[in-house]
Structure formats: structure tokens, C-alpha cells
Length: 360
Length: 181
Image (cartoon, rainbow over all chains, first blue to last red; front, top):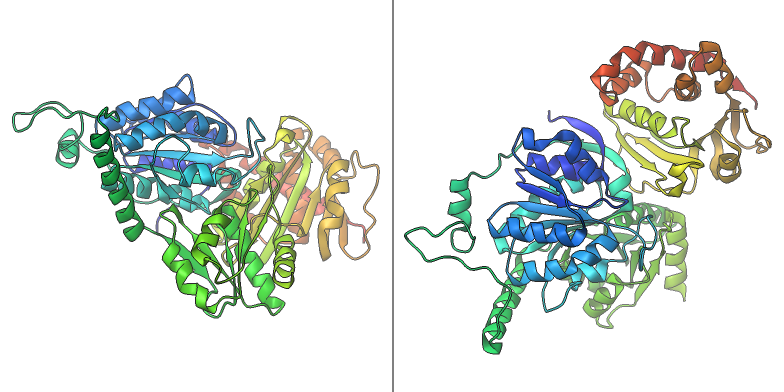
């Protein structure tokens, strides 16, 4: 049996990075995710796997180090929390424009501005609609447990390289700070130079061998028609991701008349609400989007004929709810309940909001 | 079995590590566990709490408004959490520094004079293990064997020499816990 260890979600990110063959981590400390770099510094992976761990002078610097590493076909990552991710958004736009694979972890805290250090999901729009400029997308994974934090590191890298796109793990202070048992997966070695050449030869800046010219990586295209062709290519890629990579889970939706939709830590609270509501005689189910981009649109769509209402439960003023309204398109009422600024509702509070929403 | 516990006191009393040892004990007997700390400004001095859940089944919400057990180690936490023990639940507190004793009559109330017992042991650091012992006496949800196994997992090897002292402190707590009502 695989070893099960009690650890924080943030620690799980660090151990998973070492274990899945990550080549480099570049970061800058910020609560509530500082344990990611603390754990990496404690484990000293540069002495074992050769993974580089570097504290940069700022988040702007971290994301540009990620850009540099990604250009060389390396598995590189960074992590931060909301205000730090805002600083990284310029770099993320460049990474997306240059079609570079990388992993970015956002352990969200309350905003706007410096905000609070308590949990939030206020960066849903920033993550899914792109916080930086230009028409770009990232793959966004929403962990709901420490095990997800561990598993999504490897998954994030796999998807990032498959599509040459930045992948983000969009966690929050609850998932980062909570300890749960985590099953340690079999280790993957770091890719050898030969493996990187085999996988990334067509684009990575890894030298100019005899069989091809040099690779150039840029997000700049001064000719409008060139930029348009590039953007159409990006949009095709995003459509392919939407068609193939949507992930979600459901809880008691078979006979559900009302659907709660919640991601990350709120999906855990949502499950408790479903159980509580069913005890009171309401046929409620839960849909948890695991990928926020691509959104599991088809899964929501499939449930709509049986539903009398949908309620989005979020730690913000109502962001994902707008995506659900687009999907529902007036066929079923879409309600919202949320707390902000680091406040977290308990299941009974959400249940009361649910009852109010269907009786209004 | 599902037990939802809030442990609350001052930073430095070992609240978080007590919760961690309890959670590790649960893992040793193959249970699901969550350990959700307060990590806000309170960890820079002032009050501090952790919600620990041990369950035979998958745990949904790690955040709760009502608890089966509240372990209370300062007045601020008494004010905050006494009302949040489920009817029929358990409240254990250390009377040291408590100015308003618990008033509820629909829950079991016990006290553990852990500051005094730690002084008797001559080891202030044994404080949280004495409190843990008091809890395990009232609710033996984790066996001593698994607590010690959990300790071994959570302590770095250089501190394994401290395990017998911790075992002694847990036993002291088990013997010293007093029923109030």
C-alpha cells in the first residue's frame, strides 16, 4: 500500500513537484501559500533530483524565470497568492502568447488590493477569463483536497505540455492550509536532455541541430495578419481543450431537482449541504467543476432538463454564477450565495440561503 | 464513527500540534481526517484554534459551526465556542485563566487543570499532551498505541526520545480529568 502522510495542501504541492520530476520552482513568499517554498527549501531537491528552487526578488521576476525555463522545454513552476498572481499576469499573457507550458499555483486570499490573508475564490474571473491582456486562456484546475493539490501538479504539467499552455492550480487558503492524508504517488524522474529534445524539438530553444533551423520563441507579431493567424490558432487550441479536457464530479445528482454548483473548498461544503438538504426532504445534488477552464458545460447542460433551480456557491460576490447563467440561458433559475473577504459559510448557512432562493 | 472537535486557546499552548497528533492517530487507525487551523493574524499572538475531524467515511466540509467536542484553553475561546457545542456534546476546559466558567446544562462539562499538572511534572511543554489525555479519557476515539504511532510519524527522528515523556503526560491527563456535570 502506498504511504499516506498527513500534510497541508501547500506542502502537497511541494512534495508533488519534487516527485513528478519538476525541473525548477521560482517563487516569492506570500501568505497563505508560503509553505510551498518553505517545504521545497527544507527538502533540498537540488541535492536529490537536481530540481532548482529559487526565491526570486519579486513575483514579476518569478514568472519571467518561469518563462525562461519553459523556453528550454523544462518543467517549471511558480506559486503565489492573489496579489502576487496579479503581478504575474503580464508574464502569464506572454507565456500564453508564446505558447509555453508551465504550472502556476494560486492559493487565493481575499481582495481586492492587499486584501486579507483569509481564504477566498475572488480570482475566478482572473483565472478563467485571463487576468493579463489579450485573448488568452489557461487550463485552470480547482483542487478540493490536499490529495488534489498533490495530484494536480503532475496533471497540470501533463496538460501544459500536451497543449503548450500555462496551467494554473486555483486553490484557496482552506485547501492550502488544511492538513489531510495524502497518498504519495510513484515518483517520476526528471526528463533527460534526450527526452526534452524528443518532446519539445519543434519549438524549444534547445540549440540548433543539423536537421532544422533555430527555434524562435516570441509573443510579438508586428504584422496584423500574422497576429490574427496566431490568435485563430490559439482559439482553435482552446476549443480543442474545451472539447477534450473538461473534468467534473457529481454528488447525488441522479434524482436531483435542485443543483448546487461549487468548486474547490466550497464543493466540500456543498456536499454537506446536499446531505443536510436531503435529510429535510429536498432533492438536491452537487456538481463540482474540477476544471474551471475548460468549464464542464456539457455536464451542467445534461442536468438542466431535470432541474428546478441551480445555485452557485462561491467565496466571492458572484463570478462563476455568470457562466452558469449563460449555460442555463433562462431555462432554469440560477441563484447565488457567497461570502467575501475571507469569511466562510458553514453548511447550515448555505442550506438556509438555498431554501430562501427556491421560495423567493 | 465521526467526531468533530474544536481545540482553541492561545498561540504557544500547543493547540495546533495537539490537533495534528490527534489527526495522525486517526490516520494510524485508517480513518479519514481533516485538520483546519485558524491561520490569520491570531497566529501572531492571541487566540488560535484548529478544527479536527476524524471519521470512518469521507469528510465533506472541513469547516463547521457546531462541534461534538470543544477543548477550550482560554477565556476568549470559552466565549466563542461554548455555545457551539452540539447538545449532548462534550466541553473540556482548563480553569487556569478562566473568569467565566461554562454555564450550559445540556452538554457534558469536564475540567483538566493542565497548567497545574504540567507544573507538577516539571515540564511546561507537556501541557498539550495532558489536555489530549483528558480528551482521550472522555472519548477514547484513538487508542494510546495509535497516538504514539502518530507522534512517531509527526516528530522528526531526533525528537523520538521525547515520546515516553509524552506518553506519561497523556496518562497524567487521563487520570486528572474531572467531571463537572
